[in-house]
Length: 238
Ligand SMILES: N[C@@H](CCC(=O)N[C@@H](CS)C(=O)NCC(=O)O)C(=O)O
Image (cartoon, rainbow, N blue to C red; front, top):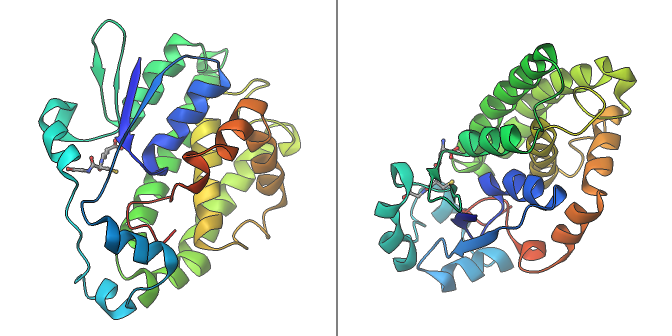
């Protein structure tokens, strides 16, 4: 199967984690996100003008590679997964659910599946809120609001839910990894990118994050290029 996404972590990273952790072979199509790579390089090096970003002046166009592919993707967006039978799947959550059903990562009872769905929906809403704030006025109030209000509120709920499962020493639901673990682990990584201290007040989540990213195939993916240097979002500043 083939996963298509931009050359960033963002929405594809939990899918990559699920695929590698379960030994599912796939092609990772990495589409350059922006056309204006020079400007993006400046972003990475911190040589940019914050006023330009905050005022929306810095708007590098999508790459020509993406513009050529857009119309072939379901709903004109990525991530998209194409199966060996030619089924094209999007958006992100449908991809994760498809893989979870196929590779038995949905818990072992209906009750567990429902708990997983609840957490999955919660994570998705928090992630969307975070993305919209990361892309808007990040250096002009949003980063602070994320660190002080939005992330702690969300992480408090997740910490409580994790602890309900045997004190929080394993996975979010049940005794085996499930698809929501990949999504939440990546969300925690994104929170740490926004604020390196984000998990300090959440010891159970902190330990959980370390456990998930220490899984050998996930650790291997995170350590190798191009994944190691990938930014969390297309805005390139985290
Ligand atoms: N709800 C969708 C959102 C997909 C989405 O916003 N994709 C963005 C990249 S993160 C995209 O394809 N942007 C390019 C475009 O819309 O042309 C999902 O979770 O997959």
